[in-house]
Length: 462
Image 1 (cartoon, helix red, strand yellow):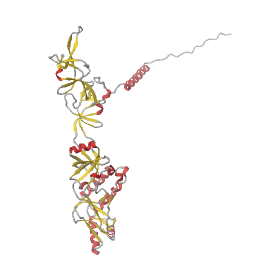
Image 2: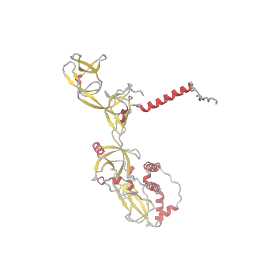
Image 3: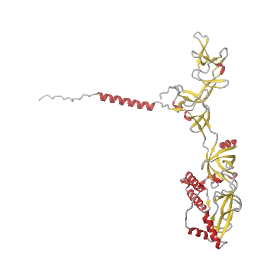
Image 4: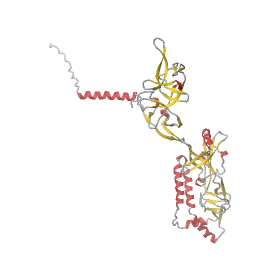
């Protein structure tokens, strides 16, 4: 029998080339970079700039005016003669009542002709349209109908010339068919009622500001009215007010100011309001702003958007995330001296030689804040219980007193250097700090955006 031969499988040797080696090196480098990116701290600098802050002082208030509702004396179809939002005098005709409806029929049979709107008419329509666009909310769709009636009323009241011509022709045949309603007092004419005409400050509740429950009735030409029905109202006093809901703290702040500047967001007009606070039985706080002008501009608006222009603080604007609190040793001013090779500031600390003999050593310490009698010193070079020697004296001071300062980490020198700040004003995102203080910040300084990402004196690589 022939001897069996053992067959060994041939293994092909690994063929390494320069391309594979380079690819492997690049791959390992990428993995290391990704690992370092996700494990190391990312310190982001922020450039300090001058700026200002104002608190959110925008409110939607309720307008209170001296308003008198005028009711119809006769039944019939009403046609308005006076322009809405315009002052009328005592005895001036405001509307006409057509008992048989012939005036409406007469106007519908007339050819349209060409009506030219004056610049004042166009401004009135534009203001109404822009006000609706800015205030419209889908959740309160009923305001679309109010806007529709407002525009219809405005357009109808621009056609007074045709109405008067029709009245003259109808009265020419029968003078008893048309009844004129004249103004009993002087005031601004408004063709709507809402039930808030007699509202006063001491009746204020939060429910009054719920516009979903608010209802306004537009008084439109050609409607059938009866005796005692409201036909228009007159705003009779240029002194009026806007009431806003607020908290007790804000109310106290405004009351202390006594007068506050008010900006109307509808047209950017400015006025001054006299402040009167009120708290109802439910504990809700309101502020009334009494105004002496602009009533005629807003006589048709019950809800008005305003901004309170209070004093703005100006200084260096920094993000709140940069602010940190740090503790320091507090040392009397007379224990600070100059020493070392460069004549820097520091203290004389008591120490002992190897033989146990007392001596002094100069310790350089950075000063971060000062008062009339004390310095705030860095706590990295001193320890609690150290004895400081008063220059040119044998008096000693034991290091123990500590205090904290609010500040940020300045990175102008490439490391995190604490700088004290004096906050003038602060909101949820930013703070305004005093500029050009002795130990503080200056405009265009770079600080750490997020103070929690760095330690004091840490080198900044980014």
